[in-house]
Length: 184
Image (cartoon, rainbow, N blue to C red):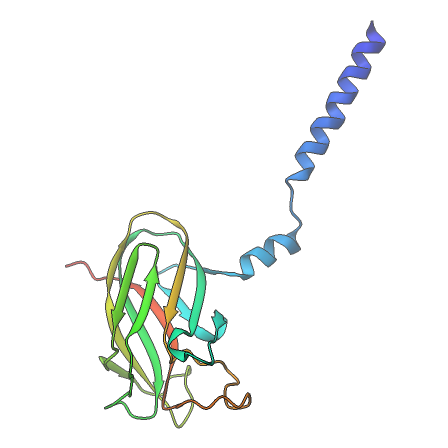
């Protein structure tokens, strides 16, 4: 009887140990998952750079070019949404079409205008200037992972000149930022 009990406990221990170790991920696999998500900064800002996005390019219809990010939101609240563009002329960015920005159930469709110019920005190089456009504000109630998409013909791949794509490079989208809104 003692022997059967010992065998039974041993089998249950092996099963328990096996089932507990199945859910454990190595540091490498955890980092690979985290590499594909943008983390919110301590001050609440979420900065989404196009060169860090999953970009989809449509050569036939560039107005459906898309940049997409997965963002981990750790602080709920109201956020102002800003679109940063690299442009050669801050008086006329030459956007022909509206930019569509989608964050969960929130959709913004707006033709960007210059609200502020950032001088000596490290995000753009000559002959470009950084021009920021206010897109709107939204309230994020729940924390968690959000998908953010920007659709515009101004989502240009890094190597668009080298690839032979004939497009106007007067203005291109550099990033999207969500900043905590000032309490009013």
